Length: 114
Length: 113
Image (cartoon, rainbow over all chains, first blue to last red; front, side):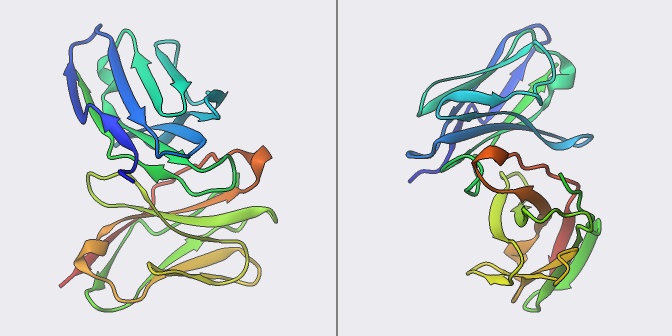
C-alpha cells in the first residue's frame, strides 16, 4: 500500500485566500484524523472521522476551519479565509478502526500564509 | 487523559542501546502506553504499545513498571536513522474511547556516531 497520501505537500498563499488540503487514507482504514503541528503548540488533533462521520471536532480552532469526508477514500480540510497564524504543518492519519488500532500518518502539508 | 513526563532531550551512541524513560503516574487502569516517533520533516510513526506486560517488536522493547506509573522504551541498537523526537502517550483503547492521541513535547533523541 502507498500509505496515507496528502496533497499538496507545500502550499503558500496570501492572507484571506481559501486553502484546501487533501488526504487519501490507507485503503480499508475506517478512521481518519487531521492534526496540526506548530513550534508553539506542538502536534494537535483537529478532528477525526469514523466511517466517514465526524466524531470529534473539538480541536478545530474556529469556524474558518472545516473538514469533510465524502467517502472512505478522501477527506479535505478547508480554511476560509486563511490567516498568517494558520501557518503550520497539517498531518492526516488513518487507522483501521476507532479506539483499537495504531495510526498511520501521511507526510504532511506545509502551509504558509503570508 | 493521563499526562506523561519525558526528558526534553538525550544523546546516545550509535550501536548502543537507547533507554527512553516516561513517567505517567496518573495513568488509569484502562489506559495503554503508546510510543510514537517523528523523524525530521516526516509524520509521526507508531513504534509500540502496551498495557502492563513488557512488549517487544522489530523496532523496540517496552518495559512497564509493575505499578504502571512509568515505562521505558528501549532501542536495542541505535542507528543514526533513529534520531527523532520520541513521544510517550497514554490513551484508553476501545470503541467508546475513540482514538484521540494527545502528543506532548516528547524527547529529542540524537544518535551520535
